[in-house]
Length: 470
Image (cartoon, rainbow, N blue to C red):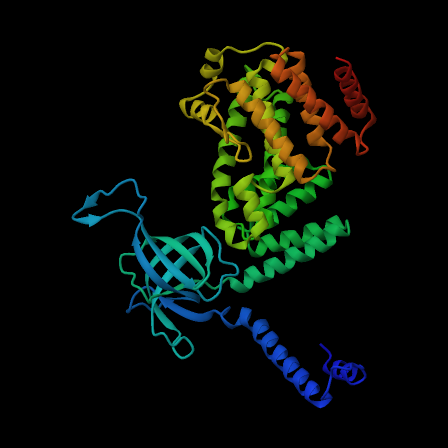
């Protein structure tokens, strides 16, 4: 607020109810001053507790070998993993995994899967830089609480750890910050379609932080827009393998929508290239089930980023699933491919025995696991009753969600019309027939609202016209 202009405005403002203008000006001065103080405090509050301390860590008291680290938090509690499957004791020691909780001074750059060290030292971090390493662990979660702020949980060798010990990491915070800066430079050149410079800066980012999945995602997208799908697949696979280290919640929500089509394209590339011998649908089904299982695990891990998400996004996550239209569309496409294999691609329907013979015991369990549809009144489909029907309905569900999230993307409406037409052609019972005809009427209108390829437009128009006459 410009204080000078604001007081001039009040002085020149004629209002009958203002009896004592000097008093009004003093009140305004106080309000402006108070606002300034509070805005300054709030601006500083984010940085007040975002601090790390330089540390020289030693393995034991007699060692002269020192590791340069940065202190990032303090241990608040320690205990055994309650959910551990085994309580087996060895020489009267409880061998369950040990877990510590720690309050963080600084959470930026702290990633799940990072190694942290537990340090015993004097609490005056400014005067005393030396500390003794008494334990080490791997971060299993990073989260935000209302009263203690950002915290982490870590598991590992923590038998000597006590409340009040400190948490440290190797001193690569500056390196990671620079890696993020280089990645942002790459984004700028990518948006300008200067792909060579974008590639240079993304690679520079990875040189500084080779475990940064966000950079692999960006490189994959960069390769894809240039038609280099094999390289794009390599990068997206590396990002997926490092998905537990994702810090950016947007990247976490985006990744599966990029990974699923990359896997499906790789499967078809190997089949068309003659790399796969024997029954190709067996190969397809096993690969798609593996992908399905990976995505299920990924969706469960999304609790890792809940602290970073807004309330509407969290509500969407709880009620419908990952609020990303590309993920919903690609997940629907994965389920549709599984359905078509189980249904014989409308050519030959495989028997239950044949399908089960293709699969290992673990793969059968994946195939027959309930399919969750949280948006519906009945929030699941059971493949044990009719697996092709369960996968069909779940595919439709995710295509509908994708269309709801982005109605201008015509791919989902197109898929829904074609799948509904399949069911109508299969002469399903009358009640289902009416439902699928209604699907065709609604989603053909939705599809035709947005311009698309003429061949696809003509196909949808023919289907809609045929079903309106029947």
